[in-house]
Image (cartoon, rainbow over all chains, first blue to last red):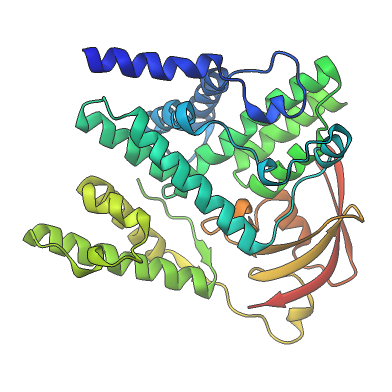
Length: 207
Length: 157
């Protein structure tokens, strides 16, 4: 039980960790990583249930719950991290665009992120019983690599939650710039349910 | 869990899936015999395989997934000379976005899609919009914010 207490204390830190994507965009009181996990889990469950082709909902819910656990130690990463200028004006200008990299740079960044997060996940789950630790690792690898249909669906749902949050901040603060987030979504979403949802979301917030 | 959808794969993607399937099958056979396969001793070993080494269930699940893909695969053929002037599945398209940034995106089937690596699905809004267009065309994606993609170059690997 001592080990479990340590684990629950560690993952509780996600409640106090603001999501970096909003921090760099100067959003006041940005949501925490745990808040993102809460809504994306509900979304994943409901949207998977709405889909006509059957998906393993229990697997998706578990995947949603654990997908960002590594961030306790690895922190939150954004696509802008490697190129973010310190100068405020330059930073604001960059955040109005979607960052573009060469294929080599993309592969390098993805590899670095994977190695860092993989180590962090091992560290955060170290005190758990081996069986559940393995299950978490398996779900995370599946998600990271998009190995199963559930993982590929959840990867898109994860981005959809960020799109909802961005739209809500836009309504409240008139920032952040929405375009880069929508470009990101339009290059990623290909699931019919998520495509339909994004259309309705767009009408709801940007009419 | 399996499904009957058709998976469009580039030649490269098909080879990679087939190779992964064969490697994992060898792993499974070795594990059943209680042996340590030589590939695990290689320094170039894909880190993904290490988790398969540790977890038989993950290996089995992945093998079922790959079997399903290989059963329902359709390989994207290189288009004819005339068709190469248009964006088809498998095309690598150089784009100028909103008259500013330039990017290179490959149009692939859903299984190979990974926008972080510049591979976008033919069923995504951008992928769908680009299909069938030629060099010089401007493609507008506006759901709900308008973005203009100008096609600068089309090539096939």
